Length: 267
Image (tube, rainbow, N blue to C red; front, side):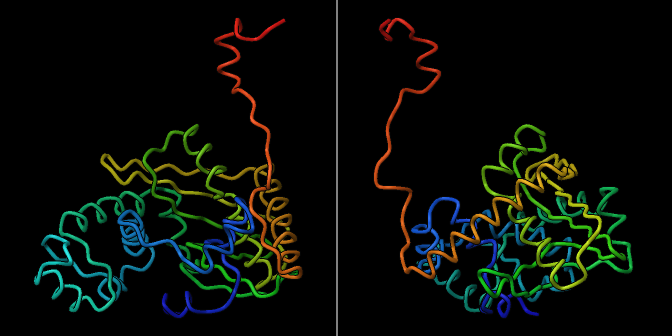
C-alpha cells in the first residue's frame, strides 16, 4: 500500500492517538488541524526509506541543490518537478546514507533484515473494542509461530540510556509499541511470546546506533495506558464532549525551590 493511500485510509493511528495523553480537546484539535511538516521529520522519513524501502527512494524523494525559498523561481520549479516528493539537499542525502549505513550494519538490524519472514513498513488494519477501526504501520516485525517480534526505529540526538528512557515515556513511544503489537496480534494469532525492540540512531555524526529492548514492565504499563486512553476516546465519542486538561488546578512551589530556600517556609 502506498504511503498516501495509508494516510488517507480510515483508522485510529498512533500519530493522532498519542494526543489523548494531553487531553481529548488536544486530540480533537490535531484531527482537525494536523501539525505542519517539520524539516526534522523529512530527515526521519529519508532515513527510514533508505533502511526499509531503498527501492522507493526516487518515488518519495528528490535530491536538489539550492535554497529552499518559495519566493525564488528556482525553488518553485523544483517543487513542481518534485510533484509532492520530499526535497533534500545533497548534504542531507549524504547524511541520511551515513545514518542508514550504520543502522543496517547494526548486528540486530542486520540479522532481522536478512530473515525471509521479515515484514517492513507493512500497513495493518484491525477492529478493536471499544473504538472500532485501527491502523498502524510498524517499521519491522516478524511472526514466527506464537512469537511476535517488533522493532521500531527512532532517530534521536543521543543513544544515552537515561536520555532515551526519559524521551520514550515522555513522547509516548511505549504507546506506539503497544499499538503496533495490538495490530500484529489482531492480524495474526494471539502471541504466547512477545519481543519488542527500539533501535535508536543519532542523526548527527558519529551516528551511533543502539538497540533497546522493552521489558515486561514497560509493555504492561504501555498496554494499561493504551487501554485507558481507548476507553476515554470511546467515552468522548459517545458523549460528544472533548474536555481539556481540566478547568482548575492548584499551584504549589516546585520541590527544588522548597529545598533550596527552606527559610521561606514558616514553621
